[in-house]
Image (cartoon, rainbow, N blue to C red):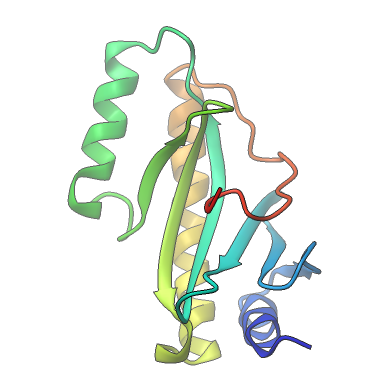
Length: 147
């Protein structure tokens, strides 16, 4: 079994979340606060990326929504060091963070995940108030970020 999966599973469970099996090696999901989060390990690096949908970008996004996204994303200051990006084929807005897997203990990664989940929940609430539809329960099948 993939040792990175076991390390991440341990961190997810230590954080108090439900770890789910990945659909292929190097990917997985977990459930926290009723939301499905995904992760993918880069094949070419010891780096793992965690991500969740925070909503969909409307076809005609409002100025306040665009300003909010830019302000939150500026230098990662309002995203707890994460990033907000657009997965253009589906117009899904993703909130993500990445870390070197070998650089953190499972306990430290669990703390990072708790902060990530808390910030994701806040972002989703703000996005709904600004008119973005919630798609955070979408089915992540892996390879979403590296296609």
